[in-house]
Length: 336
Image 1 (tube, rainbow, N blue to C red):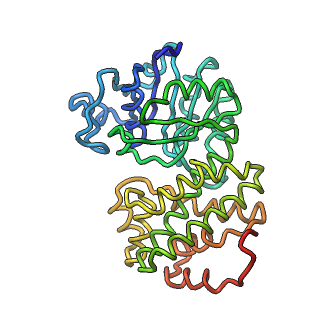
Image 2: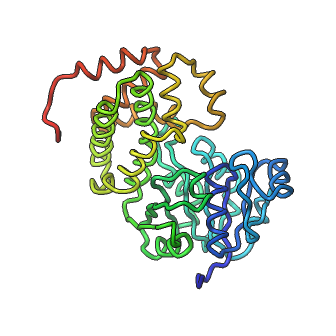
């Protein structure tokens, strides 16, 4: 590793933040993993693993634990934020003064801000204006597989080729491939909205509709991503890549996806309270469905699958009724 940055601070000790910290340490960097709960950090220090989220995966020697954010951000280093989207703005507002203009920042969280529909890189720019070296990381990734060093590919998007290359140098290894993009909005949008479509896929599978239905749903869901993305000025090709189609297929077809499992449970008649207790972690697609509907109205774009997910989650629609509504839509040309 010849990177001028010898240290990376990973902010957020959930499953995804921990997996990325483990990967970066294995790649040869000195990694500081910060967690917001001192008790959890102390447990990880003692056990040398994140027993809560990634049990039995040992921390590399180059991974250190921090509960003091100011200490974690001392010195010359890269910073990777993996803060849940619902807490992202409040976290930045409370800690903006700790970020310096020489820092290269990457955001690996996925989601839209509730109420505004803003993407996380937009929030960062608003709350931490002194930092301009910004990238986002997305793609088809399950934390457990990254932590177990299984083959993975991601997209690193930045409007600065230099910043993107800096993060590629840190993350790209034999089993972990990193590709670059300049379409920051498209990469983030795909990573956020695929969660809503994964709930739909879970519902369809939970109702026993089979492989034909799942394939159609994924394909038409991709069309919805492209349609909205183009209206928001994104590159259409972005949604055919890892952060679009790749992430969509992953979350719609594998039960490691919390959003897909949410759809399965909805189809079985579970209440939202029961589902949240069963999943035990943040289910991004639930809140994102609200913002998806808002964006469809703002940009005057039809998102029928996402709209039906919203109706199931927030308007008391039965999953069968939501599917029937989709099937009864008028026939149109496929590529519209």
